[in-house]
Image 1 (cartoon, rainbow, N blue to C red):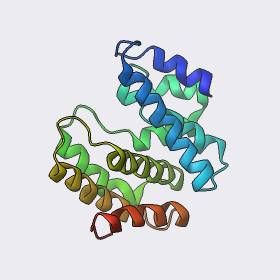
Image 2: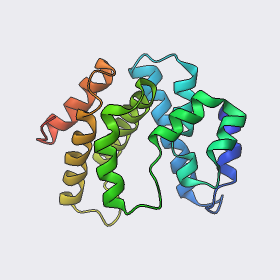
Image 3: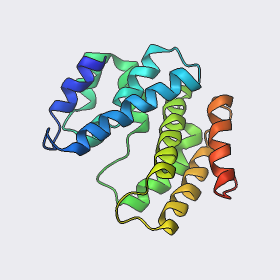
Image 4: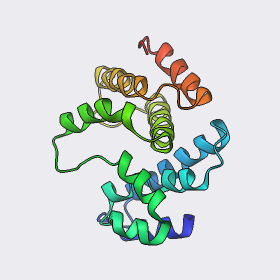
Length: 171
């Protein structure tokens, strides 16, 4: 899976020597690690989808290609967690909140781990150009997504709850 996903990443629309690509791959691996090590997830299709969850958004890879290489279940999970890049950012964020409760259990797992990874990353290092207010707004929005994922994985939800509590954000 790692070999195949890095092959897809090499076809990225970004310059392969760009450090953002290395950072993106670390996110994929980090999300899969959270699922396996912290969430106790052993479902290989969920772990594969975690490694591939942003591939369609960040590269020229298609869902059909994912399906042909990884199978229909992995492609479906990735599709469920992929934002429609043609929509404005605020609409994509609104739809994540709206659709979260209706995703498959497998997609909810990937989404939970992705949110946990992203929030931890924000706590570690504020992105260039982000204000403290913007970081807090992201936490508030992420809590709204997380509400729709309740009942998916107690261990991951507890870790998210702790991050929200530390930021004074209600879940």
